[in-house]
Length: 226
Image 1 (cartoon, rainbow, N blue to C red):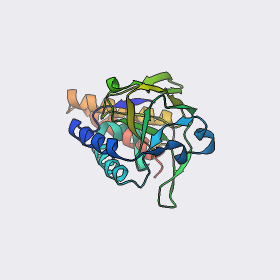
Image 2 (image 1 turned 60 degrees about the vertical axis):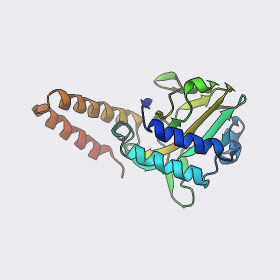
Image 3 (image 1 turned 180 degrees about the horizontal axis):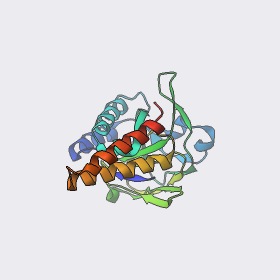
Image 4 (image 1 turned 90 degrees about the horizontal axis):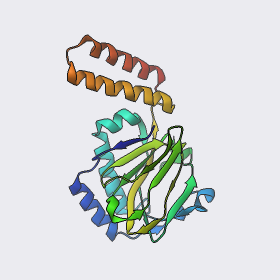
């Protein structure tokens, strides 16, 4: 399941974050990945402990905690601190699959990466190329969203970032462990939740709203890992 989540950050938040990111000191992105991925990775990243990374990462997490579409689609159990990358001058990231397990920086805690997230900080017209291409059971999809928007997709998907031939592609990327391990089950719960929302808007007092809501929570209780 690949879902675009609009307006995670406001235009003012994007403007402030972009100014801080543009002024930051970036490092070679190869130093933050495994040996196999490093062979196909060519980008710049902010160090995890960089003050700008921590500040904007916290802003992202706070925004996501209030985003109902994200919460419904992801059903997050644990979210890794957001990281930040930059592509320019032909930089790209070849086809790869994200690591299944990642350690929370500065701790001994590990999480299973069920979902991958990319939040854009550059407008599509600012750069050429840089599309995120995700391949999975839902087919091959190209993603290049407006600044402040985010895409959510299964971490098991083969994906790559096309070369940026003009301008710079600036974004945040991170992973999360969902309460629902299986993507197909997450999709069922998401579709049901969206149906409940629509029905509640159209027929708020209909008995079916209560019935469907009860079924949703019983299925969540049956499948969730917490």
